[in-house]
Structure formats: C-alpha cells, structure tokens
Image (cartoon, rainbow, N blue to C red; front, side, top):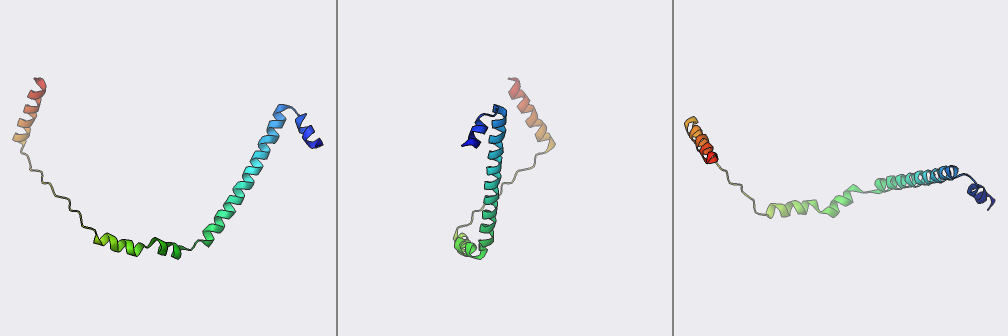
Length: 97
C-alpha cells in the first residue's frame, strides 16, 4: 500500500506518465501474445482440409450446369461526315429554340 501512496502523492504529470507507461507495457504484452498465438494458428492451419471443406470441385461442376448468358452484339452504323454535320445543325437548332 505504501507504493500506491507514493504514486498518489506525485504531481499529476508524473502520474500520467506512469499510467501511460503501464498502458503501453500491457498493450505491447497483449500484442506480443496475440502475434505468437496467430503464428501458431497459421502453422497448424491445414490447407488441404480447408480446400476439401470448401468443396471447390463440386462448385465448379454446379457452375457448369448453369445456363450460359449471351450478351447481344450491338452494331453501330457508321455516319458520313455530311450526316454528322446535319445532325450537329439539328441539335444546334433545337437548343436555340
């Protein structure tokens, strides 16, 4: 309890430094633990079993059974320069009205 009393008697800026130092230390400790735990899970992860669980081959077969979607081709006729000029004039006339 004497240790806590010493901290309580310190100025506020010292207490903030102590608090944030402890927060950083605990944060780094938790981050280190999380990284090690994550590494162990990655090492123990079995890729083959995961792929088998996804059933990718059966998914490919199901996709083959779906009907194919055909996109119609739209042909745009070519416009001569005379027709283009007439079209531009028509548009200008419509905007002027």
